[in-house]
Image (cartoon, rainbow, N blue to C red; front, side, top):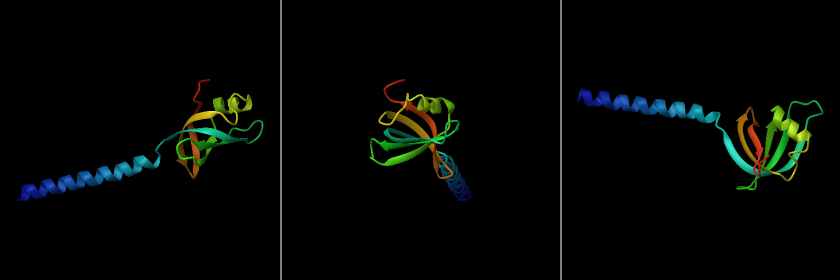
Length: 109
């Protein structure tokens, strides 16, 4: 009887710890989407950030993505990525902003 109770307690503790750690891991979860750029705003000529508004192909929702990597910012400035382009994007919600981790055209370069 004592052995059965010990096993039950051990299983309960293990289940509780798994639930706790999975909640922490999902807080910084990457979100993937494909959408069309409806608006690009660069914060100035020498700015290190820009915002791009994408219309999600699945939900039709507008999602504002903050872009801060130099390669993508150069593509915005050189007009290699423009409004109307279809984009494959990965981002994380950090401090209420959707921060880009991957931002690339679906049709290639």
